[in-house]
Image (cartoon, rainbow, N blue to C red; front, side):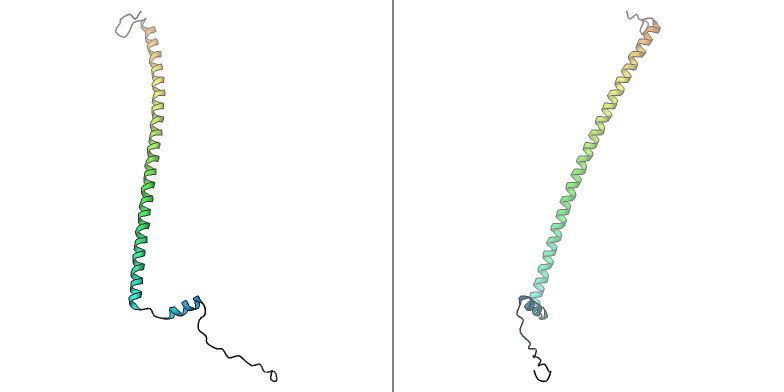
Length: 121
């Protein structure tokens, strides 16, 4: 050391040593136009294919969901139909009971004769 002064080391420009440094340096270079156009075209084709596959997958999913919806609707309709049938059977039973009751009342009122005046006994 000379009287409190420090010697500075000169900075030497060096070639890139790592892959990343090489890639960064390569970005500064302009690729040939034919290569760029080819890459752009391939990217467009790839994007188009990806979009087509995504649309197809979406269509298949929509078809599956519609089929599930139809199946659920069928099940709901079948359940509703069975509920209606059960209610009608119950009502039929009640009506048959009322008919028997009214027939018995009628028989008591007419003295055992049917509606045409014929004797039932």
